[in-house]
Length: 268
Image (cartoon, rainbow, N blue to C red; front, side):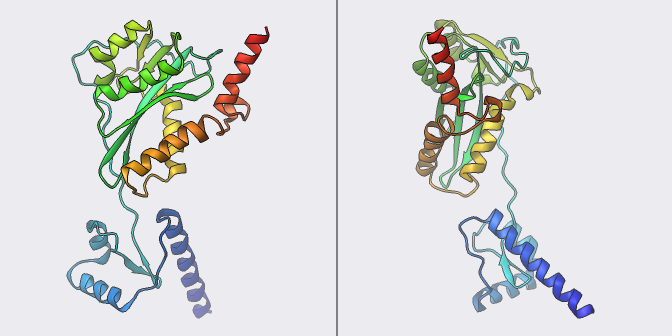
């Protein structure tokens, strides 16, 4: 009886270990310990606890033996601050009031920035999203998060939708209160709205976009920055805007939802 219970427990651990590796270490094979690996493991045990050794060593070949497999523990994800709200620049009032469902295109554009790690360092992605259709109308990628990143994304959006005057909403970081960005806003007669400090709910749709992008591109699997840039562009322009279905849009893609509005307006 005890032998059967022990066998079932061992099988359960092996299954859970296999599932863990397949979920957190994509495109890597789960391999059995070799003699060289066993020697390394014995050396680590003699000097330090193997789990602590694995967590502290950044080498991709560092594994610990669990239930007959070599397993690499999940790494702690690094956090980078992208919003600096402690600045002395003039901050526009919040005019958004969480109106997540505008009645027509180009009423409200929301924006935000995220960071993505590559083999060469960090990349920063900035997007402007039209809340009517959830379409990404402008974006910019760079290896920095200066005000020019925000400016380039906004200019991209304005070039795609000239003559529009939406309410543009973002958080209250220094990039959004810069003189450079304010000049563009004034020139194109855009109304600016900035979230209050510590209020992240206004950017919920944009945060949702970033979460989906990171999950579907599996950005925690490191690759060269040039490769990741190409994948992000393809995701935004080919998949998300044209094919990604949204339940809030009646299971239609952003571009389809936009086109339907303009077709009805042209026919009326």
